[in-house]
Image 1 (cartoon, one colour):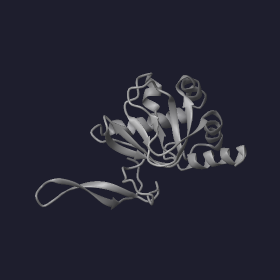
Image 2 (cartoon, one colour):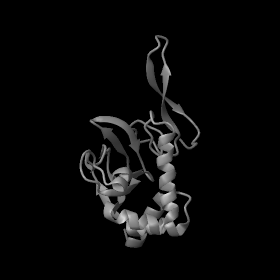
Image 3 (cartoon, rainbow, N blue to C red):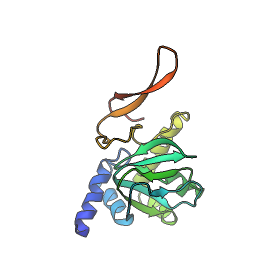
Length: 184
């Protein structure tokens, strides 16, 4: 694949992001040009809990699980971001991000993040909006997409999510459901 084809593929993946997908073309191209490309195989860590921040990343292909203290909280897929909290705060990474299969992603190193965000205020504003969504309901774990099972058929546009419901005995259980793609 040529460099131009890879660049266009990154821009295309960014267009699927709920966070930055509708940004002007210039901002998407800036992300694609300034973030470095990376790949990970199934089981590899993109981020490791407790380590120093590596930066802000966007998944280009594949899925990755967010695990805190070994417990899976959510899954991320194409167009979703990761590493933003530790990169912005300079704090240790709060959880593992583990590839569930082959994953490609782009990453902006933490030390370059401030300069990038001040040069691209619309990206900075969108990042702030994404973090604000998480604060609306602090008891729920947010990804930019709802939680989904490890299923090769899953995609961000499938609308498949887990919902909690009570059984006849009053116990809570997870079940598959579909829903519209409104913002969380």
